[in-house]
Image (cartoon, rainbow, N blue to C red; front, side, top):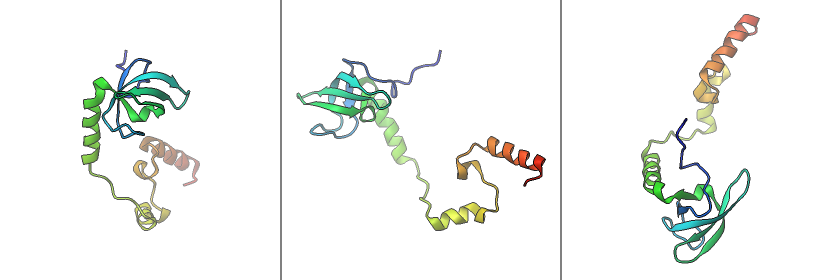
Length: 129
């Protein structure tokens, strides 16, 4: 059985969590307890934070389990330090695409390379290159 990813697993009532970003009157890193959850496709929580404030409709993206807090901070720092690709403007996007004549690559179109290759072979078989 595959191991659960506790960073994405929904929270249960009574679970101890930490705010991953500043919320209304609650600084980042504040501990709290999940009191209630709601939502089907977008999970939101009522959380009682240390110091007394209750906040409703807190997105799961703004919380992390207390036991996973150090791992979360480490991953966030790694992402911050990872070199970013330069943003593409309309001019560089046209230059990268080769004017439309060059075959698309998986990186440019976000389509897996094996599917692009399969389509290319099918077009060749049908003579519609």
